Image (cartoon, rainbow, N blue to C red; front, side, top):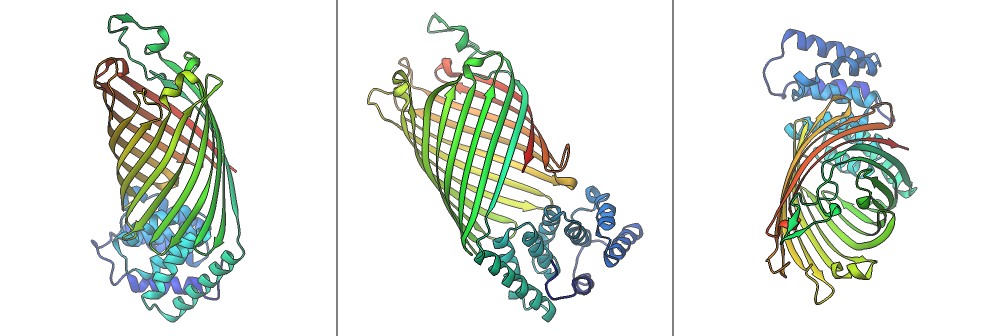
Length: 439
């Protein structure tokens, strides 16, 4: 969208000025030749050619200021706003005062429809007292954002997931054939199975004011384990809430309910409300926290001893750098059993860490690990129960594969539980592919 200014001229001026302040080693002759060729394509209005040229060198030159800036512009003008955001975020994390990059990042947010993030960046551009043409452009965009908000434009997205894979222990059951001298039934023992699954989901958002957004969501999923159908699961999740975003802070309050079936028979309902808060200390560092109160109720009277009221809470720190994201999260939970004779009152806490790498073409690679401990208030079979669970996972997502509006994800996860009550010990390996289609 062109809003009352000569974008090509302004970009050239900002880029030339920025070259005086960008640090790093001097560019090699071949690297500078590629940059000159890319600038030539952009000046001629051939952003696709510039983008195709620059993406060839992302693995080697990503993190170079001039490269990230040119790649961001080329991606944005080629209709790849998401790629532009990754590249420009990398640059701004290193060069917060680079007005040209911040202006392009604001435009990228605007192009993908994230008006509030665009507003934050345009306001930062104006706060740095930029040249007059930049001020006029940023002001025009802010006016357009206000008009969009006043129009209360809503957005709705649908998605479908199709998954298949392998699970070494879908029931999360022990491999010990006996417990306290008794032989365990086959359904209580570890068994392997193939996995088939499907998800249909919908997400709806509607701005109510420039700072307030209504959120609604629905999701239905089913997982089939052909060799262990007794642990087939089906869920319907319905929720809604509000999100406030003001400057560097955002707050959301969401309520939802989940209806679950086991092997085709309705067996429980979970419901609750979650409040979450996020604060951005900078473009690369943010802190968030959540608090959730809820309940779990079983349909079968024989299982009502597992009915609990739940409290969950957590704190996360996220740091971006280059083309990567690191996140660490601390969590806690408390389950309060409803029946006086129940054994299922428990307290727990956990730690999760993950690292994601973002690569050209929308590829994402992830590694994560978690540790948790749950301590039960009442003994099981005369034994004080304490469960320790560990998991580690690897994942990769390829966007726009096998075609546009599709993505493919590969996930490998290993988990193991060590319990003072051997009946609850297990280990488990899961390998799965998921195809997602967005509408």
